[in-house]
Image (cartoon, rainbow, N blue to C red; front, side, top):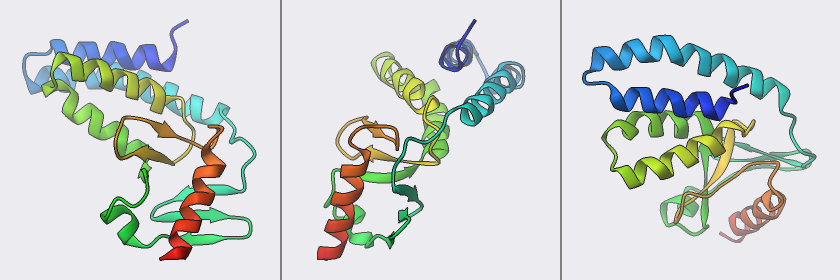
Length: 154
């Protein structure tokens, strides 16, 4: 049985073999629907790990805290990660992969595999590498605490 990541990679390979935009659109209609359905099923199956924090647009929410982060943290790259919308990250990768170099395509496919299995709407995205951290990652809570402390110090 093919996994969501396998279906996604098949779709990317199909898109790369397309010669014009009409072929890309046709590939998206045929294979894209399968990928979207599998993604939705995966999201419903994956449960959040116990964590007091949830990443939201521009901040962190929790049972006892709600922090809208100072924009200078991201603007001045004061923290090694930024909070990103996971679906927007995936959309951006899909948008640029057809024109990427072969070596970049390999990295982008790895990113897609990683981002596909995450259930969170927002994830930490490294500003220096292609590392992503979601609520099921062992370092997630520590990153949230560090970011809240950094925000408090500004």
